[in-house]
Image (cartoon, rainbow over all chains, first blue to last red; front, side, top):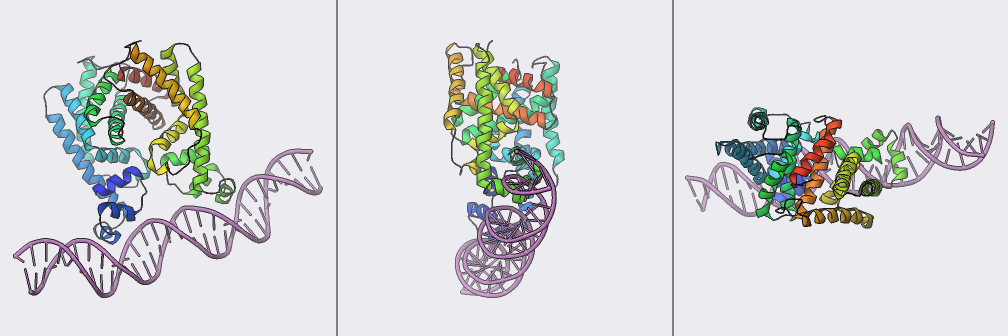
Length: 177
Length: 177
DNA sequence: GCAATATGTCACATTATTGTGACATATTGC
DNA sequence: GCAATATGTCACAATAATGTGACATATTGC
């Protein structure tokens, strides 16, 4: 599955042959574990979603301070790397949209927690009042993806990446610490 | 070509049949103008690149103030919409990478101008000194794409979008006006 | 209206991908 | 070591996408 996620990253309609090769098995073996492409994607989705949710929930619970919760959720998502990118594209890309949606409950839980933080900060006038929550949500995801891409492509040193992401996200929403 | 760009947006390996349908012609007609998929992509790339370069160069020249130049370049890119997204993915996505690279000179010109602004602002200590130029470059592209996506998906009102993008980009790089 | 050009329709060969069956060969657990 | 399980190899059918030729039908420019 991680081979598949890696492959889907580069090209969403990559052949199963390539995925099998990346995984170090034959296509025949791949077919033994996953009936078809749809099924493989579904499995990847469920696995990666679970992993992302777990990481972000742990990040949420890692601290009592709201801003540290938020920062740690950002860091957790970045650390998920390809898994996060896969899930993100899943929920916004039409070509993935013919798959069923399970695990929504858990995912909603993460999103609900995240939204609660942002709403609180907004009420406390600690973030720019001109921006909408929807915008901030998109921005959050976008900065995560940018960070993952920047590290993966070698544009930015891995050590710097999380720091940069947090500085930029804070600034982008005008967060006063 | 605009039909193709629109289609490639949703799914990079969409069938030529679908593209023809979107364009309101037969696949046979599509084949009369473009030898093959590669050729169609190449043509799209050249057309969209020219359009983006033109818009961003005009934006650069639209004002004498550096910050307004930068802001207008951001706005111009956002207005390019699908064209910009296509070009952006072109230069970062491996699945596009088997195409030739023409028009690089013009593109470099835009990038050179953009970099000059950022370097100046950095020298004048008007942007966050912790961030690298590479990071800022990635961020710039990322905020543009987020904006285009947010408008297209209806998450953010078209009127607000450019304002949000500028507020967020300014904040993300710590720009002091 | 007529010639030139553009597009549509249909048929066809080619190719890549997919999914599966049958059987051989590794690999594992005990 | 031996049985059970996992994987590999090969063959094959089914499908979808692609590119092209031949000819019919619109559409355009003058």
